[in-house]
Image 1 (spheres, rainbow, N blue to C red):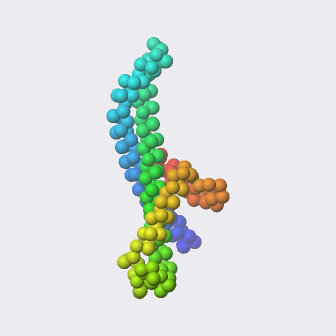
Image 2 (image 1 turned 60 degrees about the horizontal axis):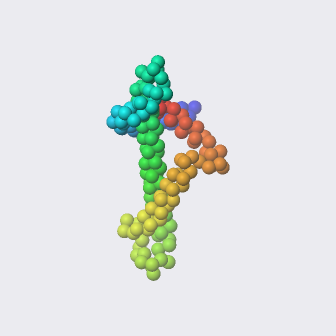
Image 3 (image 1 turned 30 degrees about the horizontal axis):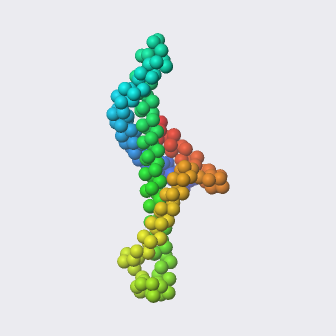
Length: 179
C-alpha cells in the first residue's frame, strides 16, 4: 500500500507539473493570438461591416461589431493553436530523431565500427566525433514530422486503439489546460 501510494503521489506530481507548464504555453499562445486579433478587428470591420449591416438589418445592426470581433478572435486562437501544434510536431520530430540517432550511435556503432573502417569510421569509435547520429536522426526527424503533418496530428487506426489509454490521458491534460 505504501509503495502504491508513493507511486500515485509521484504520478500526480508529474501530472500537475505537466499541466502547469502547458497552461503557461497555452496562455502565451492565446495572448499572441489575441494581440494579432486586436490588430485585425478594425480592417475586418471595415470590410465585413457593411455586408453584415445589410444582412442583419436595421434592428440588429448594433450586433455587427461584436460579431466581427468575436469571430476574428476565435479564428486567431484556432489558427495560433494549430500553428503551435505544427511547431510542437516539428520539435518532437527533431527530438525523437536525435534520440534515435544517438541511441544507434552509442549502442550499435561500437560493434559496427571495425567493419566500417573503409567508410571513414575511425577506431575506437567515438560518437562525439562522428556525424552518424545526425545522419540517422535528421532524416528520421523529417520523416516523423512529415508523418505527423500529413496525418493531421492524429493516430491511424490500429495505433489509436493500442494507445487509447495514452489518448485518454492526453484528453484529460488538454481539458485541464484549456479550462
